[in-house]
Structure formats: C-alpha cells, structure tokens
Image (tube, rainbow, N blue to C red; front, side):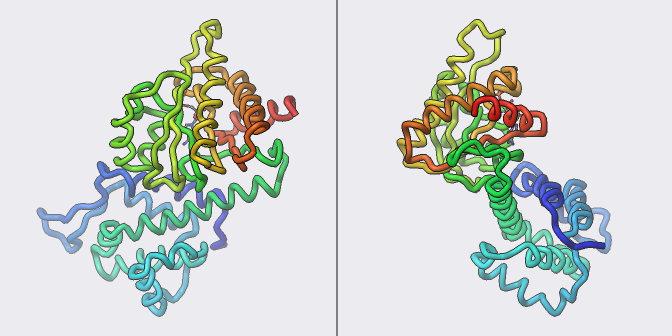
Length: 313
Ligand code: ADP
C-alpha cells in the first residue's frame, strides 16, 4: 500500500482539527468505574481521528522505537515542527500512536501539552502552501497577477487576512463565521464583543489568534430579499470596505469567502460577479495589496467563479 500523502488525505485529516481546538469537545477521560486495564478512555470522535490517520496513510511501517528520541525532540523544541515535512509528520503520528499501545495515556498527554495540535497546525500550513502554489502553477483559475480563485477551507490559509461573512452582532454564527470562530479560538469572540457589532456593508478588523491568518476582517453581507432592496450595492460595499481596511493596515494577502451566498441566500453567480468586479476595480487603484484569493467552498462555487472570471476578463 502506498504511504504517499495526497491533498485528499490531508483534507480528510485536517477536517479533525476542530476536535483539538474546540474546548467543549472532550477527547478522553480517566476511567474510574469499572476499573479496566486501560486507565484512559478516548472519546468516539477521537477514536475516529485515529482510524482516519490509518486510512489516510499517516501511520507508516517503520522502526519507530529507534526513532523515538527524534520524536521527543519535537516536543522539547516545538519550533522544529515549523520546518517538518510530510514524511516527518507521518513518523511523528506513527510514533505517538504506537507509543500509546505501550503506555496508555500517552496520547492524552500529547493532547494536553498541545503537541498533537502543533502537528496539525504544521499540516495545515503545508496544505495551505500547497493550495496556493497549485493555484499559481496551474493558472487556469488565475485572473491577473493579483487575484486567484481556489477551492478549500478559508480557515486554513496562511494569508495576512481572511474575510469573515459575519452577522451584525459580530458574535459568531453558522457557516464560514462559525468555522472561523472555532478555528481562531475563544479570544476572537472576546475581541469581537468589544466592537459593538457592525452595520451591513461595513467592515471591522480583529486579530486572527489561532488561525494561520494574522487578521480577520469581519464584514456583514446583505440578506437576499429578491434583489430590489439594494442588495447588490450593499454586497459591493462589503468588498470595498474590507479591502479599504486591508490597505489601511498595509496587508498584502487577503482571502474572501463568497459573502452572503450561504444562509443569506444571495444567488451565487450574481454575488460572484459583484465580488470579482469590485476586487478588480479596487486593486486597480491600490497597488499595495499583492494578492486577493477567492475561496470557494465546494465544486459548484468554484465552477461559478471560473465561469464569471472567464466572462469578465
Ligand atoms: P452568509 O450568512 O453571508 O450567507 P455563510 O457562512 O452562510 O454566510 O456562507 C457564505 C459562503 O461561505 C457560502 O458560499 C459557504 O458555502 C461558504 N463557506 C462556508 N464555510 C466556509 C469555509 N470554511 N471556507 C470558505 N467558505 C466557506
């Protein structure tokens, strides 16, 4: 069986990252009654992660006992992880999971000391860098030097700022908003509470906390009521105001989701045309922004962006 890691393998594993960042999720318990051989009991969700690690080629056949000391050095010097490649990460996962068999509770310690999370964050960075590179190299989707469209999860991107399709309260919600808050951790909500909400079409900025992105620009898209209530203009303002904030903070790389096209019901193609033309117009007069990435969640959004980009360029 091949132990090569593909983008799909990575995506299937990275889906579990929220398990490690969401403090409400319980991953293990110290068993009290009835007493069994295993003092630690891992949750169903955590066991699913372990199964996925096997299925997605992260557990490999190699002499992990001989390599254990190297694995330990990543715990004592976490900065080593920032340059670890995929094959090193495979060895790390393998060593820790095998070690659990010998020493029950080992994985629980790796959860508590955040080492497992750090390994995941390195995986995220490798994944995001690969996504950005792919889009540069297979430039069908590229629109200009400064803009590109990719398919993926916006919370994984190591850009200067990701844009959040937020609610007026700025206190989190479902969709991309929920995903961003989960990945950034509770400090994001704490900062958002200080902002007094945000009017539709406006934008506000916070730090990115545990996200790979340094900043989050929160903008509130219009709810779609059929198109006669100024929805187009309001959506255009979301893009303009978000970009103006990015320029004001001297940010160079910004990623947008398809604002308003989820729960707020804005038709995808119409929203997409507004997004692409507003971004193009803004970049024309603001050279400090180096790259804007449209992040599509799913194939149909991606196909729609490609179609619109072809039409508009
Ligand atoms: P809105 O309330 O503005 O409609 P939603 O979050 O419901 O916001 O949806 C906005 C868009 O973001 C939708 O196209 C949705 O598919 C997409 N989306 C949801 N989660 C993510 C994510 N993690 N990364 C990128 N886009 C996402």
